Length: 136
Image (cartoon, helix red, strand yellow):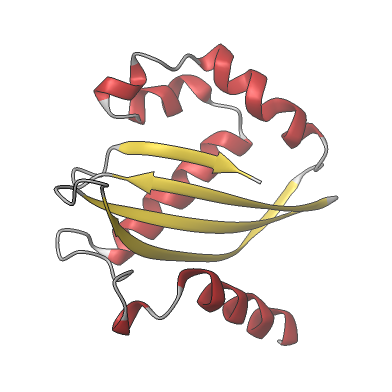
């Protein structure tokens, strides 16, 4: 229980108060859908299904990314962790593009593996196309 409270406090510190700040998800996003799709993408990474991940990126970004590139960036980190155990927490916040014309949803997915933890930061545009993927 203490770990859950600590995780929730950490997420609140990182993402801020969604209800009273500029980080609230825009109305065009459904929070449950953002959480579900972010966890789906995290599982695709964990299962090393890079072809599927590439197909989920927005068209302009998909042209730049290959499954081989994703493997070169993610496989070594995944190899350090052992077997996936569970999702620890998922949270979402909103952000605007630099020009203020596009809304983005940024999801953080905290995971537990037998030999460590990983945090996925996954970003979607208004069409729920993948535009950012980072694993730490």
